[in-house]
Length: 125
Image 1: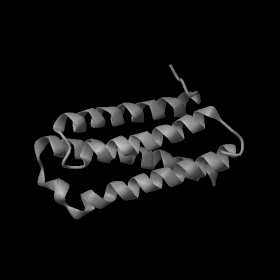
Image 2: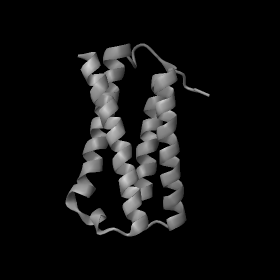
Image 3: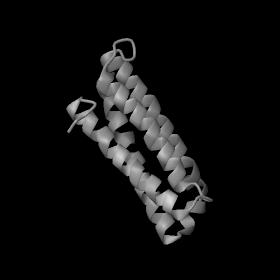
């Protein structure tokens, strides 16, 4: 069960960044695709699945949060930051500079999450 959940989590994590980058591309190009219903709903579904699979994997694999693991806590906090920055980046009405910085920040946080997952250290550098 753990292996299947871990694979699902990895798949959803890949899907979330691909959708985010696609949405960023649409923002830059002014694409009408941003107005499609699925483009508005899909990120919420994918990010919700990401959060659920992250928590499930942490619980089943490492009994987190009952048994503290700094790297899992770092990933959980970073995941919330990634989602928050992503919301800022794609939500209309904010200045373009703020949205661009939030977009770059979200991509950087995603990279951090991947590094933490690979090295199982909160400071993987």
